[in-house]
Length: 282
Image (tube, rainbow, N blue to C red; front, side):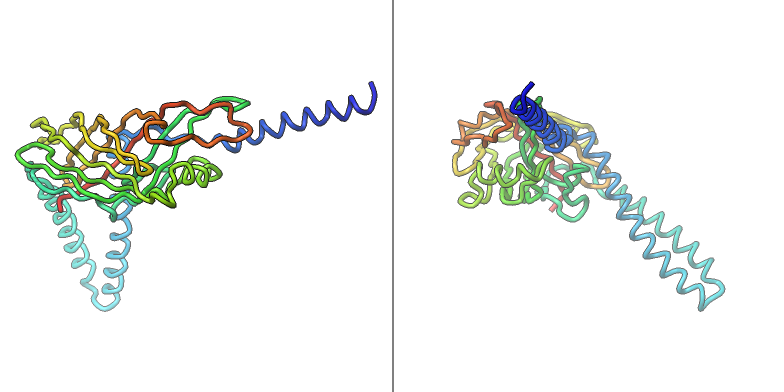
């Protein structure tokens, strides 16, 4: 075996190993599709964390008072009881069963986090075939704003905007390509506007999880098409609402050409647009 053959074989092995390593690094774990149940559990965790922070602050204040007054422990116990009662009362009073209202996307509790799927966000997921295997590419933006209006037990309006310049992915090296693909510099926002009222099952006001179809205009990269989102919603006893939705879309319908890379064999012609909203009465 001559030197050229040895060198060629070594280079081929290095190339294969390089691609394999690249794939394992690039193939970041894709988050699960949006789910009301998962979002509900995450919101519980976010609210508990916020309560722990508040409790730590209150505890510090109580301890400070204990130095001045030996009876502060009793006061602290009374305060603690009052806090517990207040929390329970607040939770019970958070939702009275009346869903008719303007529900605004909340940006304080459960701010968007890609890793935990916390807060409100919108984005996409699509299958990619690489030279070394298949992956799921996911992009999400937490820059979501808007509101939902319910009147007479029906969803009568929905206006949602998404900041396309803040999209993050399960691998950061995709992000620049994603933003270029949707031309975020020229069209920094995408939007959805409900065009037909949606009758809501009565169970939504009783704390049941309900699923409906919502028809509206989806605008991405300056192109608008009518789509039908499958929407699942839940109104919690504390007054927060959770809404998730998804719809399959064809990239070409919005004039979008998926980005390419040397290791990408193909990207599916269709993907899924999805969103998760945490809302509260405005």
